[in-house]
Length: 367
Image (cartoon, rainbow, N blue to C red; front, side, top):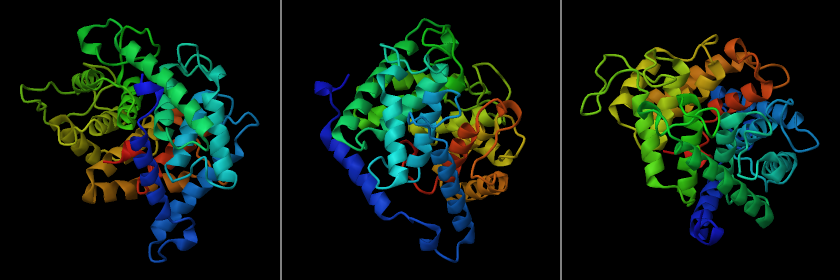
């Protein structure tokens, strides 16, 4: 899938230098942070406790999970740790945890011969997209040349599955998207966003991702807008967001935040549907008890941070105010409501990703 089977080395060197430069500026502990910023100190302490919770739940196999969706949850945990600058080559327990987690994910037993991650752990295309995104984000950042090569091979297979699944024959309104299985004949926004972000991340890394695949996915996102769009792409209703499926109608917190971030990472920062959805999110901030709270807040935090300025600052405060009081004594978070069937690994990883927007270490979330 890539020239000579390898990522272009200049791109990987640039990526490594970027991350290393950011790490050099990273506050390594609460004590090194400005003493006049107690709210940031509290956030950083909560993140560190969350990472310690993930480390404490790592199994002998390297998996970070509670026995549910092992591959997907290990990948999500890895992204959460990477979001604050933890790398597999970092000395000490955190780096060792990351290295072992990646080794678990790239083990060939975690995927089918076609490269599909969602079958063996039951996470379906949700888990497949999460895992492929993590691998692309970690490409070139392995603890060794051997681990880098394993990451690259696994990521290539994952991308092939995503690209082939997008080409399955579907009704016009569902084209360009994905759903629960690679052969699904329909699409939904929730599954599609993970696949699109994996493709966008991989394209940045130099993997062979066709422009048409990104364009088709963006078209699907536009069709998922809750308002019809006029010939200029402007929503025709005074309020609009994103729905779970095209024509779904209702504006939903989680899906609107997901749709905004997906459009942003594809460069659609100022597209009319994005701006109108951002306005809706400003008037519907994260609140405990909101449907799919952790899932939606992860997307909300990243999307609003992309907007910058007062929008980003207000969102960071709101996310902190809703998440920090809910952190439990062991550093984890507990999902409730529609997410109650999910694990604390899931909730904690998404909480860390929601709180860590200021760090800017994951390339996919950099504007």
